[in-house]
Each structure stands twice: as structure tokens, then as C-alpha cells.
Amino acid sequence: QVQLVESGGGLVQPGGSLRLSCAASGSFNHYGMGWFRQPPGKEREFVAAITWDFGITVYADSVRDRFTISRDSAGNTMSLEMNSLKAEDTAVYYCARGFQSPVTLTASYDYWGQGTQVTVSS
Image (cartoon, helix red, strand yellow):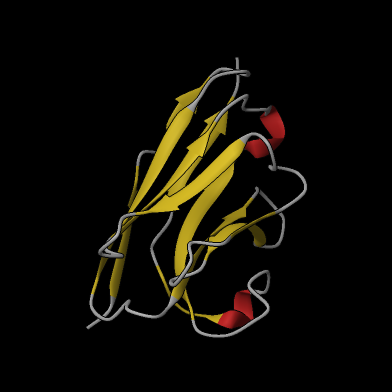
């Protein structure tokens, strides 16, 4: 059974940092993984993705150079390091298992976590 559990969300001031984690159980060998977010009242949007084999990373323009996605060698844990946070980063963040391209689409992912809230506010 595939399960994904996010953690690490919370309240942070603008300019601050947070590190999200995604604990994965089940089959993740040869699958890419990704982070998405859903701001209040908006559609779920792509944040970042990482491939299984070479650890190739892809980022949304809005987070490039501020966020870093990584996963451990066993593929059981994925992280999202978020720096220089802005109010517009406020959202529920989800991790997901990817099974096809393109990695930027929600339809390319088949299993999702329950989400963790990130609030950026002074």
C-alpha cells in the first residue's frame, strides 16, 4: 500500500525558512516525486519535482532559486527546503508520486499526501 505523509508546515514570517518532509511507504522505486501547493481559493499548482534515477530537478518559476527539492537514496523521504518565503507562498503543500510526464501536471501523479499548511505572515 502506498502512503505519503507530509510534515513540517507552520507559521513563518516573510523572509523566513521552513523545511517540509514527505515520508513515503510502499512502492517508490523508479517513480519521480513532486511537491504541489494549493493557495486559498486557488487551483493546486506545481512547485517542484525530482526524478528517481539521476535526481534531476524541475521547479516552478515562482520558487526557483528559493526552494530546493531533494530525496534520500532509498527514495523513502523527500524534502522541500523553502527560503526567503513570501506571503504568496501561503498554501497547503502536498507531496505526490509521479508516474508519467510532464511532471508539472497533477494528472501525472497517482498518490498524494494529505497536505501540510504553510502560512507566511508577519
